[in-house]
Amino acid sequence: MAEQDSPPSGRAARGVNRRGLLQAAGLGAGVLAAGTIAADRVAAHRHRAPADPGTADAADAADLPLISGPDFPIGLFWPPHPFESTEARYEEITDAGFTFLITGNYQNDEASANQALGLADKVGLKVLVAGDPRVQAMAQHLTVTDDRSVPSSLTTADAADWMTSAVGNYAHHPSFAGFNLYDEPPTTRFPNVGSLTRVLRDVAPSLLPYANINRGNGARYRAFVRKYLDAVRPSLISFDRYPILADGSIDTAYFDTWAIIREAALTARIPAWTYIQSTGFNGHAVPTPAQLAWQINTSLAYGCKGIQYFTYWTPDPARGEGYTQALITTDGQQTPLYQAARTLNTTWLQPTGRQLKPLTTETVHHANEPQPPTGTTPFTPGTHLTHTTGDPALLTLYTHPHQQNDTRHLLITNRHADKPAKPRVQINPAFAAACYDPAADTYTPVAGITLAPHLAPGAAALYRLTPA
Image (cartoon, rainbow, N blue to C red; front, side):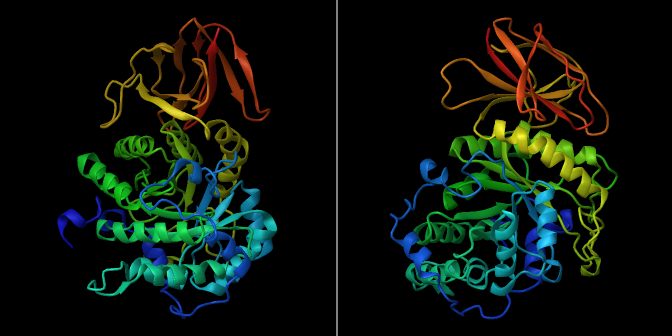
């Protein structure tokens, strides 16, 4: 593969990825088989006006599963495998505060995908189907184009027929949210991912065309992300970066990646999603509960609109990829990470995410750091925040697209995952602050102009600043 067409970071450096996990189980049987189509729902999809092939329209995207509505999407990768896919297992997922899952862990055919969707119907989860034989064949091995000189090509009309067949096999499930079209595509496949995205929008405009891209840093990664957005016109941008290294330290290049993704998402006016590391594998340690919280809160600080856990079920170590422990062990036992995730998701991320989901990041500053990480922006005084002292923290100001005054939301995030922090942030006296209580879902007024939260390792505090 030519250097300019390779991903911005090599897989060998990270050891494993989700695409490798999905591909390891193979395409499954019946790649060309056309299943039974749920004609009523597919027909309803096809009679809607096709999406503009050149853009992800903001109004259309706002109506898509997981993107739309007040609930903050909390997803998981690597769910229970087919032998452990039961209603009790799926209730275990919802009990931990998850709202959707991506199929995998040997769910690589229509039967296992329908099994997952049927269980999700019962417990209220949404599902993105990965590994459908037709979709995966089009994404991984064929090229959707009307240029018949292209080897292994499939016309747009034929691709629409294949996609219609795929949609029809799952359309009767209320939990069916869309397809995971490609995980970590190389740049050479960006145009094809874009073609499949447009085909799915045409065939089923109410389904989410989802893909996830690799991570990187610097100018090369910024160009990689721009090329992806230009070619695909996605409804959201999702990426993965796993910052907890083998010795338990934090890879600070993580911030530069997030800064690039945030800028790209704001420019494209689409949500940014990320995966957080919730397992140990080659070169990466099992995160602590505080490191789980830190990944979630630093992601929120950079404007994240969807959190996904990598992984939920622990992949079998016999695969040789070095996985150690996720939320659930290989034999189905809850680990301490399950309880930590359950607490984080239900008591903090769900309520706080509902507050932040409709907001847009205005500024993200690293405060009280003598040497802020590469790619980050050090704090400077502004209209709302005038001075900071104390421990290092991320300070994020959010605006609401429809607000008529200078009201802002402020997230103060502990810069460190391994020790508590006491940052002090002074606000302009022209504003009054109120602190968000996720347990009560209310804001409590704060006296004075100094905000001084006591933040546990990896924790954050949310405030609302309104004109006094």
